[in-house]
Length: 324
Length: 136
Picture (cartoon, chains in turn green, red):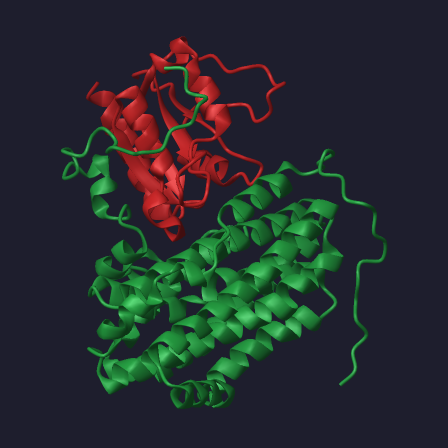
């Protein structure tokens, strides 16, 4: 298979003192400010906890992490890189190089988890499973196909789907363990990845919307139809992949609600309203609070039940700019 | 008809928060994006809609433009509540801009929503704001 490598046709020295799109600098600052490495997370504190999991639970968790490794590898090596030639500003190109690198950090961090928790033989078995699992391979193929295609906007849609939707069948597992006070350091590491993917999905989705602004109504409709078709195709595959992973533990339906919740967020990152209605996206509160302790219903002052919740709780963050 | 002047919001060029506010179909004023734009000064009570910036360490969570707006004492004296937008992916920093503004200004943090918000969020905030202004 020989494909002609597509590169940016003309390079000019990047001038960060002349910014065409403020979002580029804002996101660059956010991403570099969030930089982290897996070596800083004390994963070895999870060894004891790991041994409290049953064999089925360990197998599911290991497979989940090879699946996530696969997606991060795709995004680091192909996905984010494929967006560079389509960039509208030099700063956008630079942001994609940051995204690509960080995806490689994510991919490597799963190896840190593996080497801490399981044997070389088990690691090899898990990677073999990821090569042989049809639904994981299909997910990779669908996305890679668009990365290789010739439509810059479809590439952005596929990329946002990967960042904001396809990871979550996997992210569920460490949030599940965290909600049961297990593998908590691993969960801390995964939360760093989850945070990064949010910025990536937001930014790529934003660039997609900028491109739409200049598009004809017909082209906009084409891209919207494409987005929803792709979502359905990926969702169907995610359902099967989720069954492969979670059926033995009886968690499948719980995971699917989490998938639909995140599918809606992926659509929102692309500027579309969510597709799945509220009753289908009701994420298990334990999972939601493992993701974000602030995400509980008490934050609804209007409901009346949250009336005790009035003034914001203590936050130890200050900006110098406040003058009162 | 009570004068529910009601909403002041900030939205970056991503327009997420603006789209949520648009769907409420209530009168709203936007805090300008760029420093050279004329500053917004309000004269009637309002609820502030603010997106949460930053990435998790909490610094810079409230957009600078919103801080500038609230540094004006006249504006600050009219804030009655705050609604925040965010993304649960940011963990404990989710919608933290709402907590910060509520504490600084001593007003209730009314509601949180994610990204563009859902139809349910729009409904709850519309109803909730109606009640909120009636009770004041």
